[in-house]
Image (cartoon, rainbow, N blue to C red):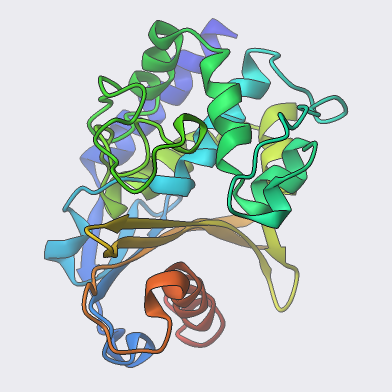
Length: 272
């Protein structure tokens, strides 16, 4: 195991040293929405990026952090794919889908904050820091553990350091994290793929949305993940930065727009 980890580290180090990046025009897929898209082929160590300046700017990962929190909960045996049910405490969390006992697959699909807040609290902060350091996850800052910087709610179980708080990550860092994580082939990453699977047509696409609200407007909207063709993985991150968009109900549906933009690019743009 130590040898495998060493080889992985050497591979990633060498890959980073020979990475190339190309700016590409994907504006037509954004349809006037301000944002960025990053696509990364780890086998070629090549990035294709739309809006490079925004691609390196950090923001809250919001619910995309559920990829990481699912991983460390599985790695620390807090849950397993077969045994992951947490009991609902009977409180109204403002989303009917969340007001019930929950297992990890449903929690991931419905982006249930109280479920992942509970999982995170079961892992010591120093252990979580170790995972963030291992995977070079953004600024690795979990100092606002309780998420007090987030003023959108007073409900403790709907707050955390990953929701409009201290932890910050850029789209480029998102794809690097995902590429490093899924370079590992084990039961945990197979479970994550099952949680993240969006569609099989025309290729397998895996992903997670994220939405951050600040001062009652959209601060950031994410869709991150990867797609597979013939076992060849391409990693991606789409993030929207449009705070004042006039699209109907954009405040609540911005992450759905990010997801659709990514799916349209994957299916039609032939980025890789």
